[in-house]
Length: 344
Image (cartoon, rainbow, N blue to C red; front, side):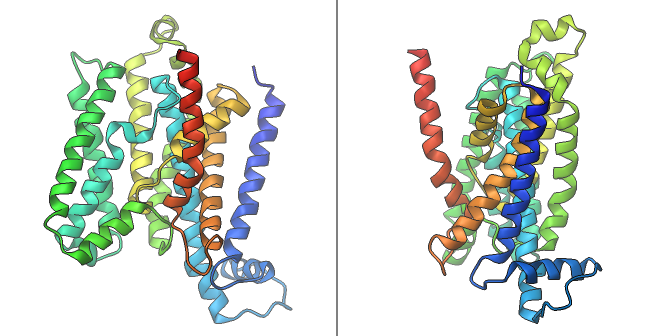
């Protein structure tokens, strides 16, 4: 069992690293802004006293407050949502390779986004496409659960198979719509599908903050119940836990949290798969520590990938969805190889 003081120290370290990387994120990019100037902008906008010897320009104010701060906050929200949702999914399915996308969330978001683009809704408002993507994700999860349910029960394997089937169906619908779209709309869809944090504004922060923070809070409150669920259905019933209710509740909260993050950032992979497994290796399987660590680790990883994407090929930017794939796929292959050795 993990020592409590060690777990608290690890969470504090992750939080400090997240703050440090967040501060770095505000200063780097095509326009370099000194840290003192970035701090002065934040203090000024919050109505707090700041160093009077710091001279702020309108360009620095616009870059920090209207471009980089919303981008960084969206990265933290999305990374935290994907990280903790991945940990919950892996706990529910008792599989370290489980991912929020298994039950059709990403496929539903892609279908919703392509519908918004195909019918011109994305051109009306910057929030139209995220809202369509969110609705698509929720409908995909509801359809998956409906197909998997038998006599009031949802076997885990049946749920996974239903998720694969729904994902394939929605993928076919998305591909069909893409064949009728012009080149401009195809580029718009591809730009969203790769996943990124560029061009994120305060509207995206407001859209994601409520559902993501509430979802994370609920999952943290249910961490002890998830520990019991992981022991097995028989053990959970022996202590009087309504297994079906808690399993579906956790699954629904994780799905909504993931869907909200996907709708504002596009399809970003490997965060919900790699980060929870790394945190489990470092901190153990206790979800009371694992869930907050996965949220902090996911936020840290995504903001760090965004920072690297801005400097690795400067002045050009590598989108964060590409960076997470480049950094996450080697670890995923290592994990897959390790599991194959344990089986054979």
